[in-house]
Length: 88
Image 1 (cartoon, rainbow, N blue to C red):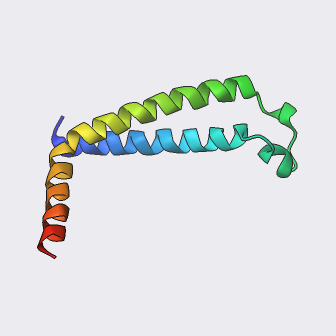
Image 2: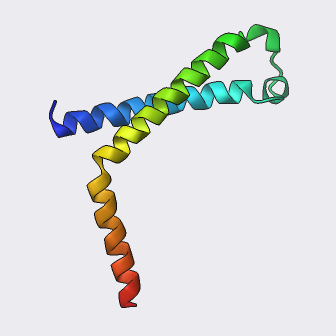
């Protein structure tokens, strides 16, 4: 797979995993469901916790892949930032 396709796959996967983790995390958040006027009985919390855990693991994997793929850029940008600060 070409580099652009790899980046697209990683960023898309990272975005989807983040959305799933955020939504399930909000559902699991103590008191939020009741605050919205919903009943906890209507949510299968065991199933939601499993989805939350696995999407979090997927998010971590995508973030690691993203950092590895963009490591050279990160190093270069860091050097440029610190060189500009030294010149001031």
